[in-house]
Image (cartoon, rainbow, N blue to C red):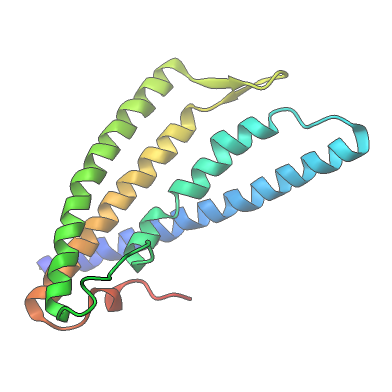
Length: 182
């Protein structure tokens, strides 16, 4: 029963992580088109598209930075320095991975808590940026950041549980169960 619940949770988090990653990829395309359009308009007419800098910094870049984090965590694709653990046994590496993932969970919990508080504050104020011609709402971006951090937290739970299972059974290394690269 617990195994089937874990597998279902893992599948749901894998799916949500892919969707989140895709949102970050779409933001890159929109940013490219927006900035490209700004360059063309500026070259042809000598004026810049209003809000390009603000939208790029407050919308696109937030999505590009935060949305892929959970998928990277599930795949084990974050930067890792394994200089000292490379020669250790697979089981010891799994236990170390479980401990560092558990420590990361504490950090991610407080990060999610702070993100929630900030999203609530910005929503209450209906925060925006003034681009000159119009006001660009920024409060939804804070909710996207919060969602991305919560998804990262959930992905880290999966990584932690899987590392503990691998360490206890001594079977495969933690990275073998991660989402395969395509």
